[in-house]
Amino acid sequence: MAVTALPKILDNITASYTPEGSTADEVPVSLNAAHLENLILNADSDAPASLPVVREYTLDGSGELTIDMRALVGAFGEAVDGNGKKIQWIHFVNAAGNSDLEISTGATNGLVVPGGSFTVPGAADEDTHDAKYWPNVLTNIDATHKTWDCVGGIDESFTLALVIG
Image: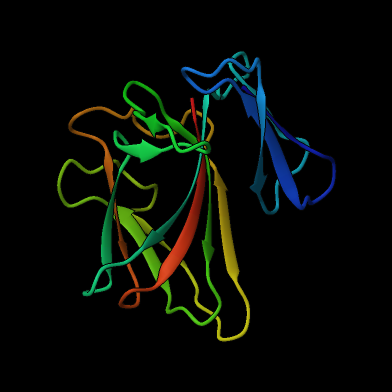
């Protein structure tokens, strides 16, 4: 998979890879990204990239959700297990009208979030974005380091795009 960002602050990232079980050589994936310049991630880059994930999540009736990095859904609907890999890049999109969204190290089998947590602010009239590039910074995903906890408004939805390698 190669993930390429065009020069300047960009509107999207284009990724291509072959989903497991696919007969296609490579299938393009368009990931909305923000504030990255001249970024190229592939299997040979300093921050290797092998799996793109894009998914909408909905917080439960208490405004909480745990994301398990060993049980993700890939950009083409396939199961993605991040075991043995690191999250290299993430992009959260908090939908217009949502409350602030806090992402933190999971309470059970937590994958450490640098700084312990971060917040994607809510805004009444527009989507808000937060993209982070952590080249080989995070702990490898495994059975005891795999979850992030998300807290926000009841039944609110957000989108998460990430690249694992």
